[in-house]
Image (cartoon, rainbow, N blue to C red):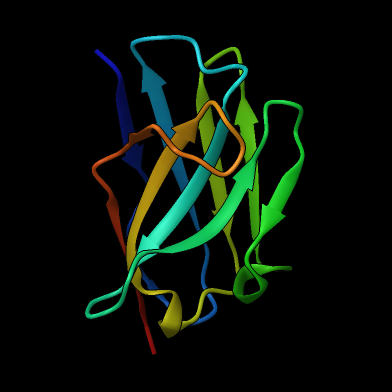
Length: 117
């Protein structure tokens, strides 16, 4: 049974930092693309960032220069370092993994990130 478990969310002030983690289990994901998405209240889920198994990254324009994705293939874990957080970053953050680039087969349950102004 595949599971993705996010952690690290919380409440932070404008300009603060958080580090999210997502641990995958149930199979090996070392050759999968891993990504982060977010959904703010009343809005559709949006792409944040992804990283291929080779380490190629793709960032949404809104987070470039502030967020950094990384992964540990030995642990099947992906991380999201979020710096210079803004109130508009407030959302539930979901990790996802997919075999084919651009598609995601498995999703986590989400972790809340709240940035206060």
